[in-house]
Structure formats: structure tokens, C-alpha cells
Image (cartoon, rainbow, N blue to C red; front, side, top):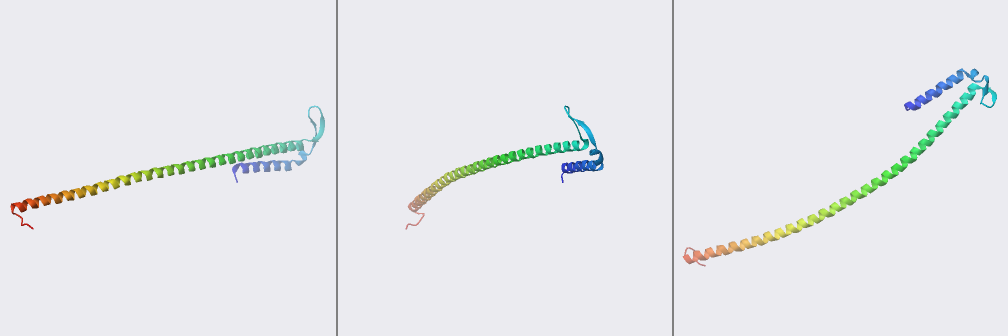
Length: 151
């Protein structure tokens, strides 16, 4: 139980105990004046009735206030949910954009890698051909000089 609820119940219990202990005084008739008229009634009972009216008024005000707060809270919750959905959609859109950009970059890198591999293969063929031609020339020279036996 909250402290406020406990204090409110304690105050109500104390007032109830006071009324019960002094019931005879509360019920004693007294002449009361309302400005333009006078009448006889128990002052304690009138004051107790006024206290009950004030408490009921405050209770109604608090119920109305809590209802307003609940409506505002629901409205804020709906707004937050819609903003959260918008943020999620924006994030998903950014991820899609990022994925597309990365795929485009990977495609470019793969293309450049393929070109580099083709260039390397061509360079290796050219180097192999050049080496074979050089070896052929050396064999020819050695054969002409007689250092290598002919075929």
C-alpha cells in the first residue's frame, strides 16, 4: 500500500473515531444562521455533511484528472508507437540502401579483380613467350658456336 493511501485511510479512521466518540455533541440541536434565515439543526451533523461533500468533490476532481491523464498517456503512447514505426522504417530503408551500395561496391571490386587476373595471365603468357624466345636464341647461339650439339 502506498504511503498516501495509508495516510488517507488513517485520517478517515481518525475522523470516524472522533465522530463516534462525540456523537451526542454532533447530534445536539443548535440554532444556525445562513445570513437571511435561521433554523435549528445539529451543527456537528451539518459540518460532517459539508465535509462529506468536500471529500466527494475532491474525489470527483481526482477521478476526472486521472481520466484526463490516462487519455493523454494513451495519446502519447500512440504517438510514440507511430514515431517508433517511422524510425524502424527509416532504419530498414537505410539498411537496404547500405546493402545496395555494398553490393555495387562488391561488383566493382569483383570486376577490377577479374581485370587484374586477366592482365596477370596475359603478362605471364607474355613472360613465358619472352623466356622461350630468349632460351631459343641462346640455344641457337650456342649451337652456332659449337658448344651445343645440334638436333
